Length: 323
Length: 317
Ligand SMILES: Nc1ncnc2c1ncn2[C@@H]1O[C@H](COP(=O)(O)OP(=O)(O)OP(=O)(O)O)[C@@H](O)[C@H]1O
Ligand code: SF4
Ligand SMILES: [Mg+2]
Image (tube, rainbow over all chains, first blue to last red; front, side, top):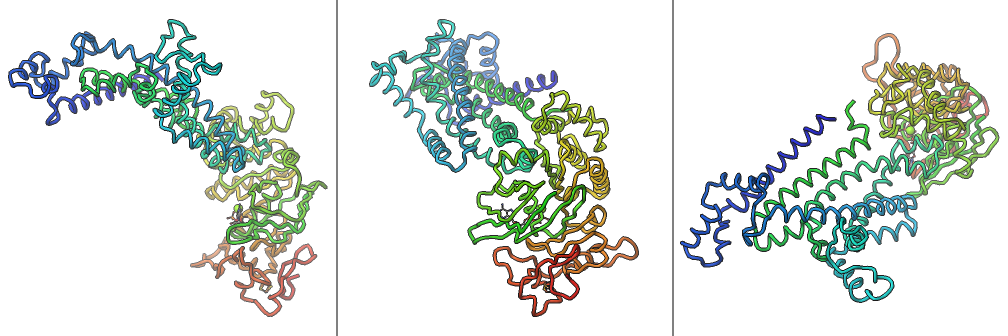
């Protein structure tokens, strides 16, 4: 176990190193990518460019630039934005992490619970009207673009119906720290949670239904029937239990990606200053230090999410446990 | 104990009604081993799945009568049927590699069946599972009980499956090709085991196989199936010494001799099994039968004798 954790950490460092080098090269060393001219602005004279290069350290060899940046991120923590040179990047990124984690965790809980219920009920009532309607609802959930859904949610809960009993509890957009009051934190996140989760509820519900129906054709289900077990028990203890293994694989991929910044659209629509929104803003004005830092942090969380999934695997599937 | 009369099972498909079992009647007495033999697709599995009430294809139609200890099983509500399954009638399947749920230990799975049917504590069920594993000759049963299926060899898994099937002392055990997926030495051990257990538990066994050699070793009585019908039945020795149906003869010819020189090629039966969609009129073996004659355009029925065949040839009945 201990060895496995060490191995994981190594892997994580390796992934983070690889990703940071790759991103660094893309922005600093691909032909035509000249950070200095971007900072100096269009049509800047050669002298100004030269001055900018010196001032930002862009005249150094590329590996020196890379290591300087890494040092400023991990050791001194005083990396500053290219756009606003007084703005410290590392604290800015660290500030976004609780926002994104709160958003994604809450949505993940919702989508796991609801998709399990929907997938199982649909599989149990296969081909009935209930199954059909659940699957159509799932399809609708999958096909709604999240920014559109978010805007509609905002329209309904923030303006149109805000003054009715239904949505008067919805606070204005923006994130409230958990430490400043769990209730406010919870209320601001309810609508974003559902908005983000709906796609995944639909997707996971449909996938789980298909997996369950397939599992119900397996030989071991026939054995379970021959044992005289009830259909409910067979569905939950045998089919669902074995289907969870592929469910978790899917979950790990999506959860990692969302924590790593894919929740961007939801963050933008609900004005949550998460890692996705920060990266998005930095990409708009090509603020390289921020991009580098968010990417490194994001890859850290993706690797962490994968590690979590591996642990879940060990819990769920005896075949991956080492003797 | 088990009395099947004129069982018919059809599946409706896009191409039409497919009659997989076409009028099968047989009985199984207390404590006997009935061998059911026939080539692939002849309906062996389907007919016994019907007995178990395990045909849950919505397109299936089951007709006829299946009486078990005087109770009619055809049309019995599933909740009733479930009380018989696993307790009174147990079934083991062909492939031990896939027959067990991969995420639970074999002990858990055996105890699950015991707890389903008997009102005993979990620890008692566990102890019983250990005893059963010992009975099926699994080494270190107290240790093996906490193993997952993937940690056991095919033979060991099949033993665990057999232990599970016997956990509630069923009066009827259906073994559907339990040795087909195993290699020869393991096969022989499993056959010995089935025989020993059948004596200890006094269960009747229906042993399905397509291997006449296996039948010769284990069965008291034999039934030969072809194209969804029983074409011959009789006591093992009579049937082996004096086969009446051309299909049985052909099957017996296809066993490699135990002694002497092996023939270069075993005699195969020419032709292919009948299509279940368009059954041939008359004798279903007709298209492949070398003895076919005029009378065979009618449907031959099984005779009343203990040993009889569904064939018009003289002396067949
Ligand atoms: N659910 C089903 N739907 C349609 N046809 C089926 C179904 N189950 C079985 N059949 C058909 O019924 C026929 C008899 O099948 P069965 O499994 O009983 O054969 P078998 O004698 O057990 O053969 P094997 O030795 O291969 O196990 C086959 O032609 C099969 O295709
Ligand atoms: S009834 Fe006729 S066709 Fe059928 S097996 Fe007998 S001889 Fe052959
Ligand atoms: Mg079969």
